[in-house]
View 1 (tube, rainbow, N blue to C red):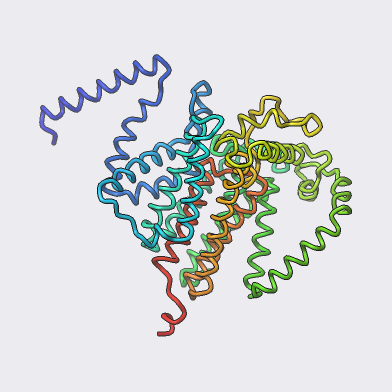
View 2 (cartoon, rainbow, N blue to C red; view 1 turned 90 degrees about the vertical axis):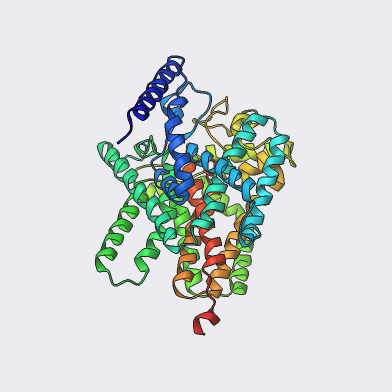
Length: 479
């Protein structure tokens, strides 16, 4: 029981906070209401940071954009995840200043070094940015994702059970979104492709990021399904969840997600066939030569394709290659051309991180515009995880992203070659999940959002943790 004087203090400060909050709300200042959440988070961070990180993972698919509900505000946040991530970043810096300790195996890992280069160049190009405030906000958000979901997550994944928890928390939260989305879609008809684009709101901004995350977690789900276990009931539940994800992927009508899934399945087949690198390299050269020789006829065939996006799956798949009349495809080409033109004007430092959407409008040519283009350039990004950094941070920005991708697959390949059984299988399906995102990244970019950043950097942390903390070589297995 609280003493009487303690109760008085409690009620006094509670009423004081309510009065202050009412005053701020009267002047349309709403973020003070989140102060109790921040205080609870800070208290929880000191006693159970691992629980905070896992809570962020669960809330990520369910997070909502502040601006969706308060359109007039000058900033935007994903709630509750980004305030929590900012708090984690502050806590990380505070702890680093106090003891300065960080596991050197993590700090000097090839993926970590690639991330340092990426962050360093992003910082430099934020200084040289055409819109420094926008760029430093963008840099800060990238930093809190990486600190929480990569550097701190590697420590979380020292316990292998937390790797499972990480995946299942996102998977189960995303099932809530799947049920909500398809319930809404059923009201318009499952063949209504147009409705699929906005029934995901407010959890996802559109169906493309939703589809990308569904595909990304399909491979970890398959790992759990394939893994040897005597618990048939658990297998049945996992199998049911897997089928729900397949259903959701189909009715997301996300062509880029379908394409990335097919490509990653092809990669999985190559790995299972145990083809050596020389065979894969020679095959790639042959495919490249054929593509160059047949480029003209291939382009003519694409121009003949008039299939539009629709609820009929055959037409929707055919529309992937329609570069003549499909507005979505044509607008994507328009954005890519704008990114390249922006790069040509500022090839070294670019226009600044996060500035593409504010700067691309003057780079649109009239003959490239579509029915969904905007003269103000206010409807999104470069639709490429590679061309976006090229325009915003120049050639080094692009190379830094490609270096991270290369180090991720180098690490995955090393783990797969030197380990046996469970660690080997886990690294394979986590890297395949990442491959779906990096392939999807040719057509869209979502790393500026919590929906993609949490699993992408988290999957990288899983690979690093497997490499540093859970590697058991073939020789050790036979010892």
